[in-house]
Image 1 (cartoon, rainbow, N blue to C red):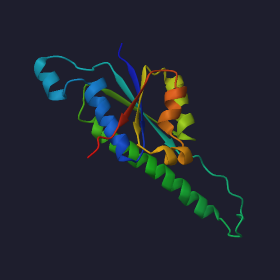
Image 2 (image 1 turned 120 degrees about the vertical axis):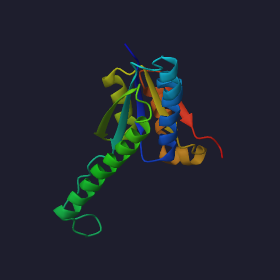
Image 3 (image 1 turned 180 degrees about the vertical axis):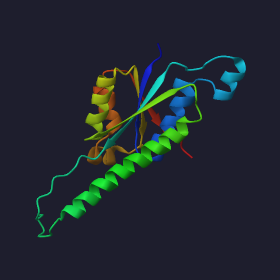
Image 4 (image 1 turned 45 degrees about the vertical axis):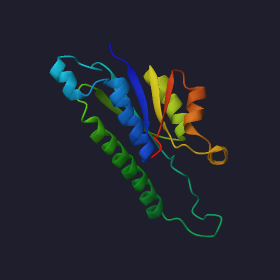
Length: 168
């Protein structure tokens, strides 16, 4: 039985780089064309589980603190945008995975804080490894924004690979 590789995806280039790196180096160590020519199955049997964390649905009162009125149409539009964004992110990730036919790919979209969603998915899906991209924030930005990759490295119940973008 193959490995279960959880890969956190978002709309950033760092995420796409981490996905490509994972497919080339962990899930399918040799390029698909070479694997087929050599008669080997590379990472066959491995399952890459793409996990996308949608921002949670924000509950608004009819009147916000500034006195503006939020209609049901505005809230529905915000929900639709969030769902559409999730579909676009997953579609782009699946397009990258299409070049690796020897790797099984599954997707999960969940609402919530990315740190919690990813760590919960790792445990729930029985992941053998978590692969996550790094935005490469400096100390100051990381202190203000928090680091999803650092949180996952400390809290995930499996080995974690943090993939950094090459400096170019």
